[in-house]
Amino acid sequence: MPADGILPMNGTITMISGNETHDFYNLSLVLNSFSPGDKITVTVDDANYDLILASNPDNSSLAFIGISNLEQETVNTIPGRMGAIIVSVLVYLVTLLNFIFGLNLGIGLFNLLPIKPLDGGFMFDEIVKTTGISRLKNAAKFVSISVLMLLMFNILVPFFL
Image (cartoon, rainbow, N blue to C red; front, side, top):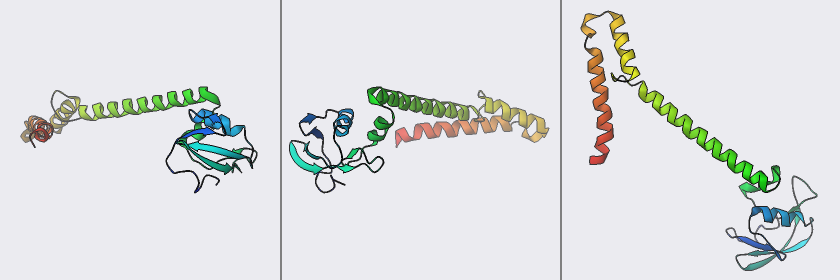
């Protein structure tokens, strides 16, 4: 790779052969104006480095500098700035749906706790009643109070420790 051992590992490319690169989109546009084998000067954090471009492993007609960036794949697969906007909106939507899924799962599981005002408490009470065993008459109340106390213990104890 042309950049291997020449460009610093951490740095910001600000210019390539006199062309400013403000963001990754501009960097891609500038690199697309060169061909494999061209000699370029890369400015990284106010220091200049000379490189000879290689051919891209995926497309031999494109120039390749040998740096990696996760955004490179998303910008190259969906053209232009509109692609970057679409990708950021899709990432936002996936994150939002993931949050909503986790919230719904948590609420649903909490609702299944065998505490009397919740649905799980009523289901547990009906299960105990349908067994018909007279000694389990107060079992639903006991389990409901025990789970409620355990829940309160788990919520309040971390504040005191």
